[in-house]
Length: 228
Image (cartoon, rainbow, N blue to C red):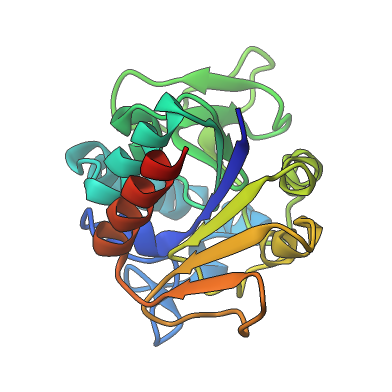
């Protein structure tokens, strides 16, 4: 079976009611990024950061996968599909996708604040101050902050280099290093770009689909399944 690699960004989750990571005013849910999404913010005010991600987690758990998430899961019927997502929600998994690489972590898990490799499943939406990992350090959201390493980026780059078909959904390709992944896709591989604002210049192997995710993704999935 052919390998389909899908890179998804905030645009696919926005249609499930989740705010995009950074609005046009530079804020995320009304907060400055520097106050809630950096190691320095955690050092300054861990209570605020913890509360912020608890609220985001609650929003995620209350949201549902949309038609785009569900369509991507259907691709598994006839292709080897790997979804590489910049999103921290679990909507791809809940839609039925079984091979998902989270570049920036997944908010439904907690992690040690001193060892990012120690992560834990969560049964609810809240991490309380005073809850600790096995090393005795405070638990925090399993989310990659600005200034932290992106541990899955090399895995993602390797996956992109092995793509037979590449699909980009709902991302402006503005956040690095994730934005550089498209350059690892072999030149002879067709790239489908689904976004209302196409972020990549046209090329012989680029198919532009200027639709929102819930329209464009099911349309493309139907085409790929028919032609498989």
